[in-house]
Image 1 (cartoon, rainbow, N blue to C red):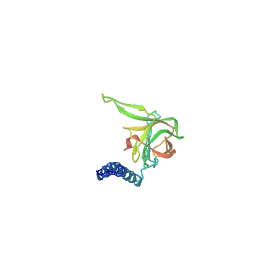
Image 2 (cartoon, rainbow, N blue to C red):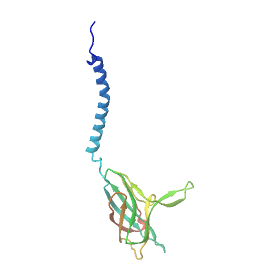
Image 3 (cartoon, rainbow, N blue to C red):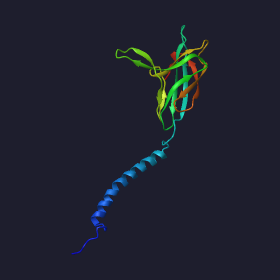
Image 4 (tube, rainbow, N blue to C red):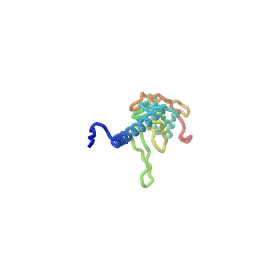
Length: 173
């Protein structure tokens, strides 16, 4: 009778061991390939890159000084950011972030919000039907005047932008 050495693997043990090792190696290779693609696309670890354009502010009418301002805020980076506050020396008082909503009965109302997300690779386009800024205008505004604003974000540096005063009949797209 021949005695086998217990430390010498059989062909079957080698095959089973290689098959067992192949699954984690394949999973790691797939994960590494996905991460390499993500990094190559410039999305890994890239912070939010905020750009603010198309600033418009409605000219108040009648005896009112309350009005609304709108901006297009783009995030060209790989991480979400949040618009948390807007300031301006060209307006009176605080500026509120607000969202316009509709009840089940069709009545519209305004609700103040603490912040608004600017998604990675996306845009926040303010409008009278969605998110906007409510503020009090300084006396003497005329259509075509420029008003300076500073938009403050959770992670990004503040961004200064200019809004042109327009008549509400001129619309905001």
